[in-house]
Length: 330
Image 1 (cartoon, rainbow, N blue to C red):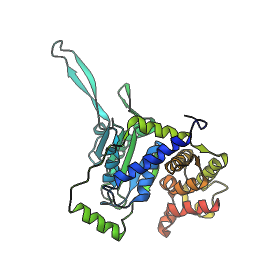
Image 2 (image 1 turned 30 degrees about the vertical axis):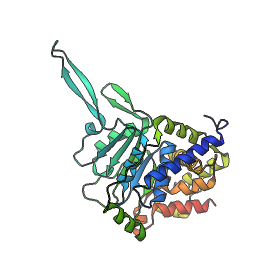
Image 3 (image 1 turned 30 degrees about the horizontal axis):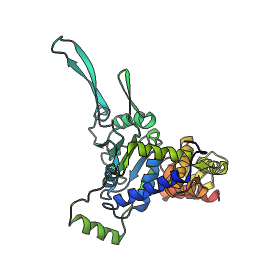
Image 4 (image 1 turned 60 degrees about the horizontal axis):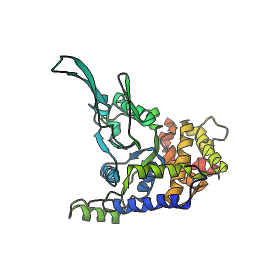
């Protein structure tokens, strides 16, 4: 589908999908509207999402419930310090033909061979196992021995991470962080929302949800998102924001020069535009705007901006620096 072929009915299908998903998710999830919006943005833009929040905020429940609403294969991997790469990707095993005595190798697929992968507490496993995800996230394939195995589309990784637990955790390498389209901050519910959560979860079993989309429907919605029109000035605006996070860039604000050691790369610009297109389509608009770009910049950039020790000592966050960049761009 091209930009010329997109019509009102295509964009309306994305908006209607959003409403149907929200209705199902709200059977189990209280609040977290911004988190759900970002998750759907990531899903429809075809990008991976990293959910960061303390335990008990329903990150896992949210992702698994989303998978239930779609007729897609789903796997959950609980990442632990003793998890091996083969536990994620699979392994070749030797088999012997009882009739001939001939031995051959056969590849047994691991849980990564699915369409939605929930990587739970992804920072609790060593870098060697984290790296097992990298090829799949980047190229939608797994290489084992001399063979390459394609992953069924749409393949998406939704990972969760606990930001406060330090013992037994391993920071995600920058190359892997860059593969996540969005870093989604999951915060505590409000007081009234927490009262509702406790009342719901202590008096009745988990509510069932309905399947509302098949794989081909989701792929069609993703094609619609790609066809959303983005004006040249919106693209330039997105690139200006991304380059503004680089301390050696002429347009970088003073705060970035002082508190950032490494800024976001070109993939961030690509992801920012794709996410802006998805946000526009989710709200029934055939054109992405500067407002879409500005709204999504924190989620696209916060995990790609490496701050200095001075920033950490003075309590200057990546989000604050991104806000300064956006403000500088008007």
